Image (cartoon, rainbow, N blue to C red):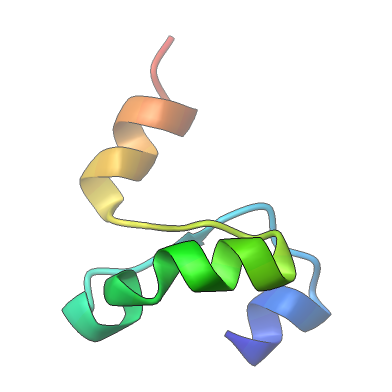
Length: 47
C-alpha cells in the first residue's frame, strides 16, 4: 500500500481478502482503488 501511494499508482490489484476489505477506506484516503484481478480485467482491460 505504501508503494502504491509513493509511486502514485492508479490502481492496486490484489487477491488478498483482508486488503480488499480496506479498499473503500484506502481509495477515499489515498485516491488509489484496490481491486481484485477479475475487477481489474473487466474495468481496465475491457475493450
